[in-house]
Length: 74
Image 1 (cartoon, rainbow, N blue to C red):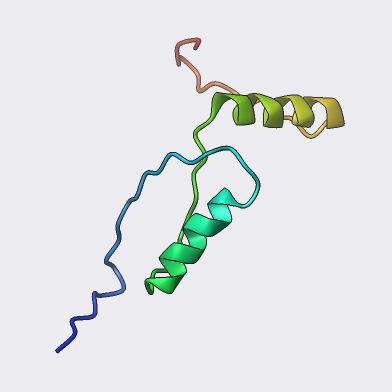
Image 2 (image 1 turned 90 degrees about the horizontal axis):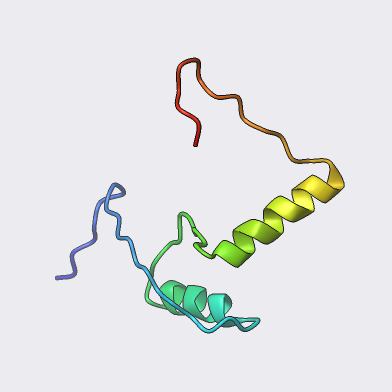
């Protein structure tokens, strides 16, 4: 008898893939074919973060968050 996990069951998978178009899609396809459902994707890449920040600044969509009063400078 197969056991089906509850809706609150979750699993975090960290992968490092080659930076080539379609690679993330291949990972997502493998997860889907195994019956998984992807709830979120976090990209941890300094170059990507810098590119997003630069584009937001250039297009005028960047906003600075206000520090909470008394919070230290970062």
